[in-house]
Length: 401
Image (tube, rainbow, N blue to C red; front, top):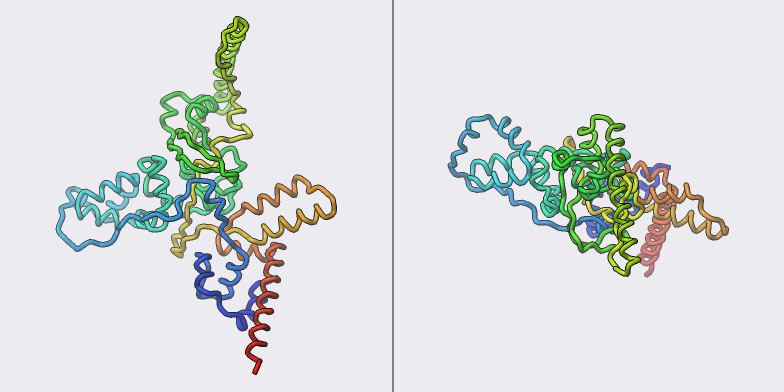
């Protein structure tokens, strides 16, 4: 069913959505009322996804307004062509480039003319504020951040990814943040135990400092701060150190065996002391490597992610991702039908419905998704019926003498 064919007759009789509605849909194309109407009715940006991770709704961007021209020596950099200077600047981290802007007018003007810097500052100011808070600003280069901003696919599943996994500087979707173990963040000590990292290799891992606040969909509070690293990065560094996966696994198991033996000695000593009437805290059990990476209650879930816009180099369009209202409608519809029939929803169907709820889309992709989403088609029919009823009411009111 083509939405354009349905909507065109309605577009002639229905008023164009008012500006307040369009403000709620930042990606709605105001020049096309039909497209805007479809997006307003059938898509949304669920706030609870943003609020369960590190999120700043507003952030004051870096001021890059042009100053009044003045003479300022650029030193040796002034001898290079602008293209070479920009190439050098693009390999600097954001903190170093920010400091370089403060040297003099010449370096400030050259740094702010760097396209990668301008786009990141202009379109991802909230994410930059988060990156600074978690102490990753001196870690990733301007080019690395910009390249990630220009990507759209999740590194875990290939779907549209509106979030940034901070310690890895890669894109991720909400489903992978929730279910994919490689998209987790863990403490450096856990990374050392899980991948057999020595201290020099452990120091290669980008580390972020967690932020106190509310995380997870259930509003879990985190008051303690921890240093966190990416599981994906830690695994990559582990393979770099041990060369082969088998050697890494063998090393990890050997170290775990030694720790477990020491743990059993401590537990035996604790039991004897307790029998003598000396109370003390029970020694902690040593977690196996597979337990570290597959613990059911991930205490750091969503603490290493933040919303991150995508930027199209060719069209210069910025998007933050849209979710389908129809998938929410379809989930409720299917579950209600099973409840009315007295049946239990199969596990695979429940997993699929949950994944559909979490899936985000780019604007063009979600318009194609609406064509095949049963819930979206029902919502669209309801919107058409509601608009037709409003049009009839207005016509009847104007027809009265």
